[in-house]
Image (cartoon, rainbow, N blue to C red):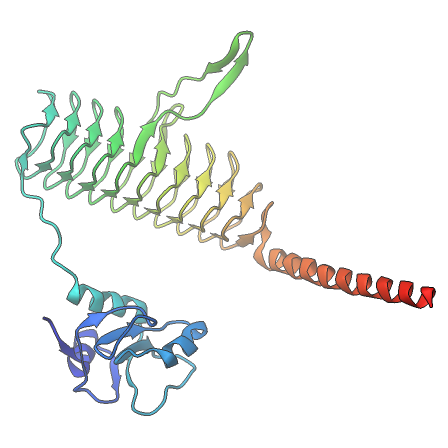
Length: 345
């Protein structure tokens, strides 16, 4: 079993050690489940009481943490506490799964596909005509790649992913289980016999270092491309519609929905269950709170909340007003009751 002393971890992380450097740990875990053999971390003051009550032998905290801990507590003060805790977690993590180069005998691969010998192609993979895959890419079991798909080097495509015809994937991209890239955009015109499908003849282009979560969908463009730029991270169960552009290093968190033709700048964060209406422009660095619904363009750096979305401070103020009104309503009912009692006397 791996064990590390507080001194060893301090040197490894470049963190300031407070307390007994000989204290050892053998696991990294949460504050509430930690034992005297474990290390945990706290980065926010709202977890201070939980940290005080935790049995963790060592705590990693930010250097500028404003709360003090009792004397004798072993502390590692870090300028990047969250990242340093991740490094410690990796010290105890099992080795990553290795996918050796080679093609499983059950894979169905069209003869015109280009697959380097450094690639791993899993069981029951289907690869279409003229598809090109880069060096060291891993295509795991049950993946379906349509014709003329392009996938870069060092990618990891997990089980059950579907990438449809002509879509382009960059280098070092991770796509998690059962995601669908390049399904048709949702567009219909009303006609005398019902809804008539609008042809979706564009593609999806995903640039380098993108990660897409399980069961997420990125629709192909009506024409041109749906464009996910480099460094974007997309959580599970996210919907990205046709002709959307998502700027570099943006984050879409679980159950977010982006309607067609939205243009999103770089560094945007869309929190869980948020949504953006068709054709909006969202500026660089904007942050959208969970369950917020965007119906208007968002300027760069704005923080938005509520539905319809408004500046976050206004949204929070409205929530406070609702609570105040509810309390006033209760007081009014009490007064009405007392008045009735006085009238009956």
